Image (cartoon, rainbow, N blue to C red; front, top):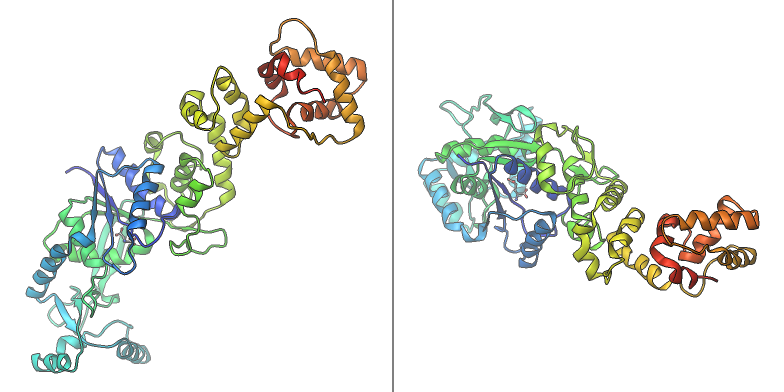
Length: 458
Ligand code: GLU
C-alpha cells in the first residue's frame, strides 16, 4: 500500500513553526517512500474556521516547498461522519448522555473523594428509554459518547485494557483504556468533536501513517479502537515532540506568534525555516539544507527527542545567514532582478555581497551603494580621517584594474601616510561604502572599476 500521510490543521489561524514541523515531518516521511501527502482542513468548527486561513495554510505550505497531492475539507464530508455514527449507534457503541457540565464536575469530585479514578461512570448507559424521553421533553439534547472496549461483560466494571502500538517516532507505546472516560464524539448541539471525523477520514482516504504532535498520544489509544469499531485498518502512528517559545510556553495559532507568514514577511528564506522546524529537537544537528529533497535524504522521524524543544529565533537568523551565504547566483538571478539588480555586474556583485546579508532584500541597499556610492554624508570618525581618505585617492595606481588593485593601492597609501590597520582601512571603507562593515574591499574595488572608485573621493 502506498505510504499516505496527511497534515490536518484547522483553519482557525495562521500556522506557526510548530505546525510547520508536523507538516514537514509528514512530507519528508512520505517523500522518502515516494508516497502521497494530503492536506486535510479540519473545519468542522464552522464558527471559528475561516476561508482566509485555509487559503493562507495552502500558501504557507507552498512557500515551504510543500504542495499536497490532494486537499480535502471536513465540512464537505459530514455525510461520512453521520454514516459512521449510525454504524456505531447500531452496534451499541455510541450512546446518548444528558449530563450538564456542572453535573459532570460534581460527579468527578465525588469519585475523587471516594478514591475512584475521575473518569465518566457511564451513568447515562443506565437510563431507560422512558427516562431519556423525559429528559428530552425537558429540552435536554444529548451528547454522544463512544463506549470504550475496556470491560469484559459489564461496562460498569472496567478492567485494565492496554492498547499498544509501535510509534514511528517514539517506539513502543501504550495507553490503558481503563484510565480514560468514554470520549464524547458528538456535542449536544450536534457538532463533531475531532475524534470521529479524523478516524473516518483517515480510513476513507487510505492514510497509512499519521504523524502529529505528542499532545495526541492519548487520543491515539482511543482512535485505534475506533478504527477497529469501524472495521477500518489501523494506520501507523508517530508522535513528535512539540516546540515551545524561548520561555518554554507552547506555541499557539491564536497569538499569531512565530507564524510562518510572519517569518516570511520578515524576509526569511523558506529553507532556513524548514531546516529549523525539522531538525530542532532531533539528534541531527540544526544545519541549513538547500531543499526539501536533501532534507528528506537525512530525515529520520525516530531521531526526534521525547521532550519539547525550545525554538530560538536567534538560531533561525543564523541559519538564514548561512543559507544566503551559500546561495549560487543562478538560483537567485530572478529574485535579484525583482530588486532591480541585473546586468553584467550582477553575478560578481552577488558573490561578494551575499556573505554580508541577514536578509535577501538587503542586497538592494548594497546594490545602490555599488551603483551610486555611499550618499552625500559619509560618517567619517574625524576630520582627519576625511582628509586622509581624500588624499588616499591620489595614490590609486594606474595600469590594469583587477583584484590586485586594492593591495597595490593600500600599500602605496600605507607607505605615504604611515597609517596601517584600522586607521588605514576604516576611512577607506567609509569613503567607498559609507558603512563600517561589508564586503571584502579588494573584491568591491575590483567590481567598482576605476571610474566608480574615483567618484567616491570625499
Ligand atoms: N486538527 C487536529 C489538530 O490540529 C489534527 C490532529 C491530527 O493530526 O490527528 O490537532
